[in-house]
Length: 283
Ligand SMILES: [Fe+2]
Image 1 (cartoon, helix red, strand yellow):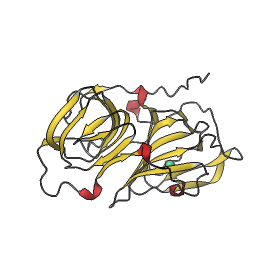
Image 2 (spheres, helix red, strand yellow):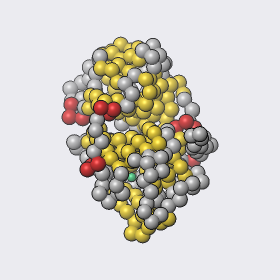
Image 3 (spheres, helix red, strand yellow):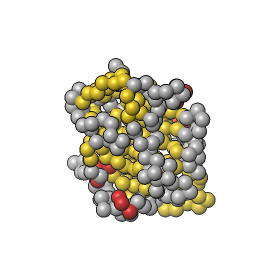
Image 4 (cartoon, protein in one colour):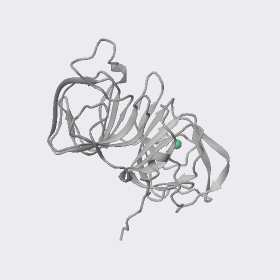
């Protein structure tokens, strides 16, 4: 998990390329939001074309986690529609999968997604890691799961907690007008990596710019950012890597800026693509 710090890039600024690294799933188009060059673990957006179909049995040598951004996909007879979530561990057997009218999925892999036909050898598949399907649209928000040090108005839909590492994935939302009372908030950081994909809404990084829907973050440990807030509200997909969620707040407050220029801290290879986010008018 030695991917470099990335706060933040808009997914819209990155190109789709044909095919999935590792060679599986012919016909799909892929945007790579982040990848570890050595191990191949990556976060991608995969577009399955209408009529996509693949017959198994087959399995991956890596864990696959996904969140449906658009359309729907059917795996082993289960249909994953808008905002459905799954964590399919290495060795999970796909007997069949297909998308009738197409789908776009935010997808992470824990290593290069190499496809192998048939069932896995004994010991590869760990059922304790399986989250077969969560229809997040049906879930209630839970305010009690948010760090009490954070300002009120935020809530969580838990998706997964790794039983061995405590790493977690969840949806994190705030109501609009989450504005600090006195115009200032502490910067903060974490002891683990925090990965973010903005599903909807705007997240304002006082130090880096306004992130809109499609914003992507790989926030390395001990890198300070913020203060942050939101006037529109937001709905984020969040994943911790390297341990459970742990926030570290600065002692002093810094003034919040609401229209900061786009000054991302991202890998050099992404800089030529990074244009930032431009809000459309609502009138
Ligand atoms: Fe955070």
